[in-house]
Image (tube, rainbow, N blue to C red; front, side, top):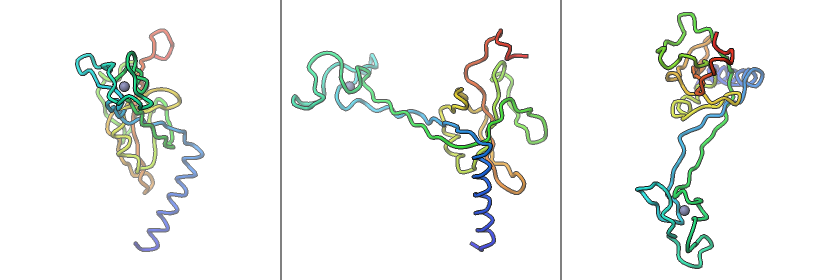
Length: 175
Ligand SMILES: [Zn+2]
């Protein structure tokens, strides 16, 4: 790679880091949970809970005779939450005007609060595959696939999300 490009890329990365640090907020991206069958008990596929029968041999510290499996607490599955924090610029209720604005169907939007985030393009796959995103403590979902947009010759990832919990009618959030 020519040095010039390399340097400008480095410069961008540096200036982006400054920008994201200064204006950015922590955005928690949750990927779909991993659900694994409990290693200590048999799973009851009909009732979708632990069968209450130990898979392990007596002597194993997690072996149990009766009652609730101590490993999964009777759930039969072990759920692993996958969370990753990224830095980005958060813009609640973006105006949405202009040629670059997102188009979206009204159906999914009525009463929901919009939020736009800008972050590094490297987070595209992570965001696309996300289950939900938590911004300022509020659970949000992607409104559309995130896009990479050129911003002053630099690439930036822009994603539009909406809050999952619709605001109450009397909360004053709906104008
Ligand atoms: Zn179990």
